[in-house]
Image (cartoon, rainbow, N blue to C red; front, top):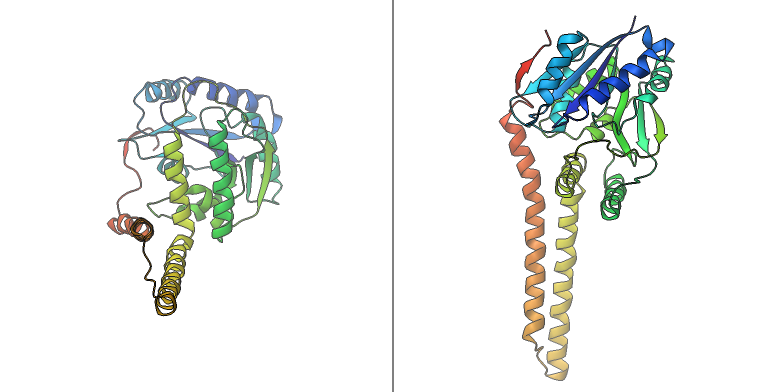
Length: 313
């Protein structure tokens, strides 16, 4: 029989652990094909400071299929995803969130598609962002448009981490062992044939999201830097354009002086131009600094995560 590994990253999800286990169990028992399979649920506690780990431990004592890995601190969701995939043993691996925004009811359909042998991955995408703040939805949509223009690695708009993958695909993902991880990009970069399932957005049932607007902005920036060098070209092109404008401006000043005897005046406009050019220079240096910082972190060769406690043997 196939072994299915269900990887669930968690950060302060004490209100949802029982619910996600109950829903997964309900779906499995209610489907003939899934009920005949072997399962393991791998919870990754990403340094929670509530009772998340305590609840997971309690559940694992009553059910040997429930396993956990607890980090020594918060390393981020990307590290949690990597740890879960690395410690999974299944023939097929399912990745999903603990907040029930990834509907377990799709699991039978996802398994059916991947078991057909036609696909290496069955992934999900949201067709709407109902319940999200308008400004957040706007910037999210803008991110997908921008990254798909400037990057060769295409990321499907509304793509979720919720997916089922073959062991071969997961092994390929684990070979991408970079420290600065952007899983949505990595899933696309490794290739393999993917089937997309669409569903309406489901709001978090309990608890508060850990993704603030600022954290999402940093995450988006990491994604752009990880899968595109376009920002470096942007700063170069901007420098060339303003150099040409400066030359044109000097020619105009010389002509006006020779013909009209009128040297260009206006301190306010001069200061404005200086500030503009200074801002562009700092912006370009900032872009370069982001790429250098990522390279710096990679060369340190630090572990992606540190495991403090686990029941996986």
